[in-house]
Length: 199
Ligand code: DGI
Ligand code: FE
Ligand code: FE
Image 1 (cartoon, helix red, strand yellow):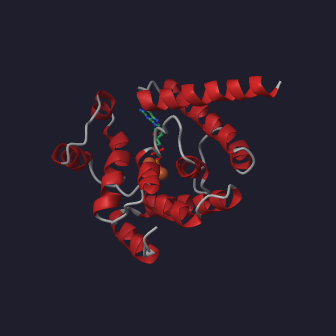
Image 2: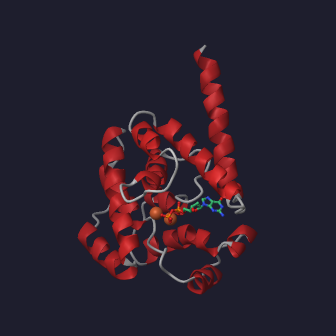
């Protein structure tokens, strides 16, 4: 991977994000590093992907939509109705254009950090999970269980987060992005398959 100036990235993010989001970002970056150490993934990539995952979060909705239109990034119906979902797609674009990151795995980790996707790479799983369990997160159910599980069985932690997220979205009547549902369906199926193979 090309050399990346982590300090420079952090400095720009401090300007682009509000204080709370910047603190969350640092939390995700170091939680992602810890997960990478535990699961033998690339620590440098985990740090950069963690730092950049929410780089477009503080941009207003009009700006996110106009970037998508200018860059021919497709906006789905569900994203039209819930434009905050676009911070992942736009974040991936900003990571490339403004932070000069070209590593596919890092860009995918930013792109898929909100909904997940079937067949996530180890780095994508790490960012998805770190986003949910970083120390600043307080409100999700089963947090202490998921935090422990993340360092023991990464796929079990992933599945638990997907399940709790779907339950949460249903409880607040928020529409589920097909990508979130497909990710859950994929990993639940794999979970059953693995269990069948064990006996
Ligand atoms: O940006 P963050 O708040 O750090 O975290 P995130 O990008 O994972 O976004 C979390 C929010 O996204 C959380 O409130 C659940 C929501 N979310 C995840 N999947 C879906 C979703 N919201 C909708 N409407 N549909 C989804 O499929
Ligand atoms: Fe996010
Ligand atoms: Fe986040």
